[in-house]
Length: 77
Image (cartoon, rainbow, N blue to C red; front, side):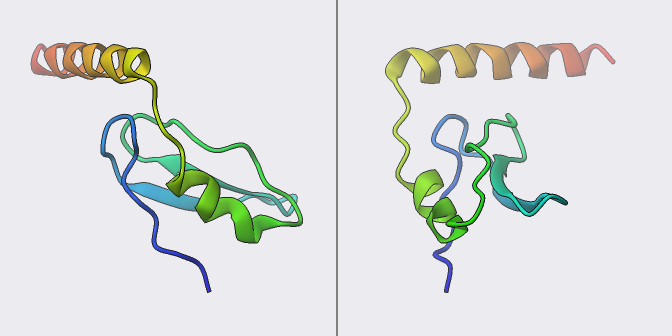
């Protein structure tokens, strides 16, 4: 049984598991599109790989800046 996916550690977006046609699996954030590596064979570790990642402070800060910029640009549409 797979474990529930935690929110994205970078932007708190919703995580989605995607199955790839060639038999692989990947988890991707629906908001910032960060993702795990593609897992083949031992895909039971995929959720654990997503749920245990720890972002660096620099990545969190850069992502926050980018998400603010995206929001600003969307307001001009």
